Image (cartoon, rainbow, N blue to C red; front, side, top):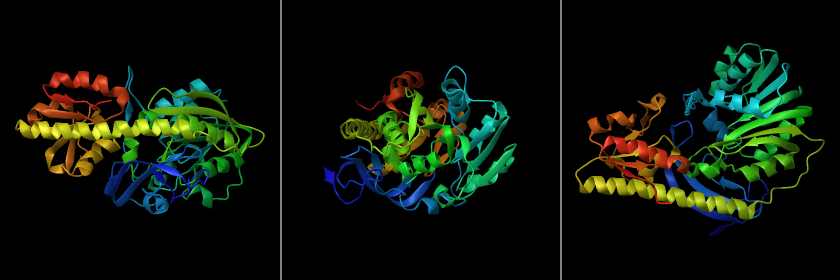
Length: 382
C-alpha cells in the first residue's frame, strides 16, 4: 500500500510503501527499556528506497536520549571461537579494513559511554580523541585517558571549529532524524582525505528492527553506501556479511549530491524483512497455542526487539513464561515483568514450547542447540 502523508527523510519524496507492523502502544527500544504510546509506521520510500519509521521516537529524539532513563545497555558479547565485546570486535574489524596511523585526531560521533574509545586509545595511545554524546552516557566519558573534548549536546547544535583525521560512527545513523545531514556535517569536519569508519545494524539480517522504537532508520548496505557517496565519501573497504556492516571511507574532493537510487532493491529487502517478521510472530503464536493445548508453558528465544514485542502484537503476555538466551550477560533482565533466563533453566520452569525470535542467520544453529533441552522448538516458516 502506498502512503503519501510523510516525506522521506532522505529525498523528501512523498510516496512510500507501508510495511508491517501497524502498531501503537508500549514499545521496546534498542536499550531494552519501553517507551509509552509509540507508533510503528514503517515505510520504504518509492523514490530513493530509504526504509524508515515515520513515527517511533522521530521528533522526540532529544526528549528520549537526554534523560537518565536512557542507559546504554551492557555490551553484548560477539559469539565465536573467542568471545569479545561488540566494541572490541568493531575495532579489530576497522583495523583489518583501514591503515590506521599511530598518531592523529579522532572524533567519536555518538560515543555512548565511551566503550569504543576506551578500546581505541588502548590500541592507539598516540591519538588525540574527542567525543559527541548527547545522552546520559556522556558522564562516563571522563574515564577515557587523554580525552580532549566531550560534547553533551546534539551534533547539529555544536559549532566545532576543529577538523579531524578520522571520525568513527558506531550504531548511530539508525537513530538520527536526518542521516544524510549527519554525514554532511561529518564531511565538513574531516581534514582533506580524512577517514570515516562506521558500523551499523544490517536491516537485511535484522528484520526484527521493524519493532524497535528508536531505530527510526532501517539501514541497508546499498542505500547507506549511496548515502555516503552523496555526502562526499568514497568507500574503500567494507565488511557486510554479518548482523552489522562496516565501511571504511575517505573524504573525497567534493560531495556528489546524487541521492540514492535504491527503490527497487530496498523494497525487495523490506518485503523480505516484513515476511520474516510476520513469520516470527506466527512462531510465537504457535508456541503459545501448542503449550496451551498440552498443558505446558511457552517461552521465546532471543533478546531482540521482535522477541520482546511479539506478545504485545499477539496480546498474550500472560502466556509467556520467560525469555531464553544463551548470552549470560542478559540473564536476569526483566522485560515487561518477564525474566530472561539461560536455556538450562527451561526444564526447571516447565517450558515445553520455545519460539525462535532472532535473526534468520541463526535459526538453524539455535534450533539444533535447543533440541538438547527436551522442548518443542517453533522456528519461523521462511
